[in-house]
Image (cartoon, rainbow, N blue to C red; front, side, top):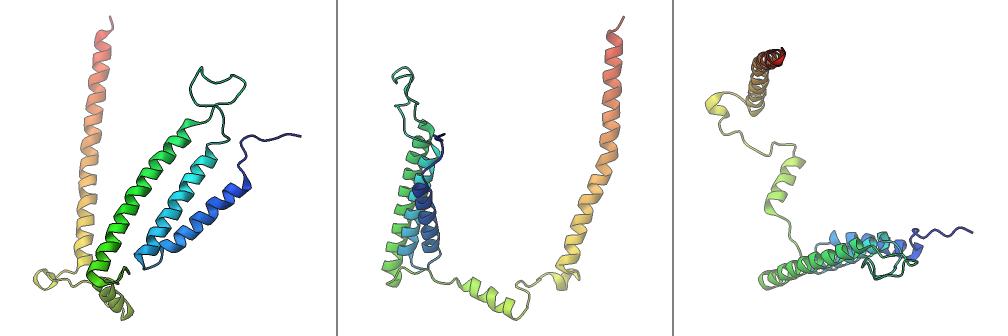
Length: 185
């Protein structure tokens, strides 16, 4: 029977999936406390995924100190987990500070709708433009027409620079050929 050393445990892979799914579900909530728990679960899921990706545990990753018959552990996965722990800690502290500040100001930790988002949603429901073209009366052109002119300027500059670049390329190729020919006896 062939035993695969690099196949991860199904239970660990399932735990990673459950941690990520639960964490993402909590991240989509409005309460900052639940968002914080989501960040912690996703962080722990990432740590577990990195450890599972590192393979089976083995000897200490110090060359010459381990028995040659024992396989050495991959130190990269452990270093990445340490980095992930630090990032998760900093993010947890930031979200905790936001939740505390929201509690002080509003008496709750729920993320409120932005007034600008509400205004844009109302305009979108009525199928109206979100912006007003303030200089349309002065110039007589709409934003689409102005954008088309800018696009045409770019195409014109590319068209005018292309023949000049090809002429410069031919001149430099001619100079290089003359230099090569000049070295020959």
